[in-house]
Length: 46
Image (cartoon, rainbow, N blue to C red; front, top):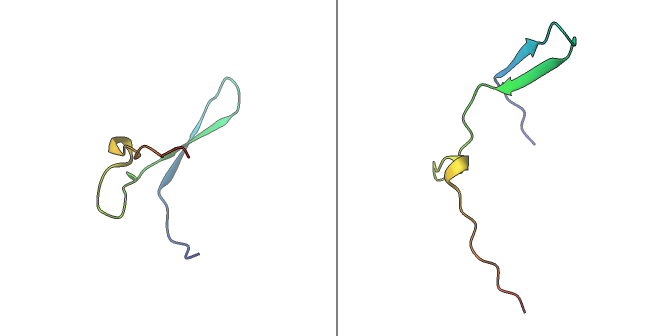
């Protein structure tokens, strides 16, 4: 699998010391459809 630069931003939570990682890029399908607009086809049950 090819590895590339990924925009991930780290935010430290001072009260707990935990780090929250948030993606900085929008994920899309190969046809350009945004991830949140994807609707799966109904799968037939045999």
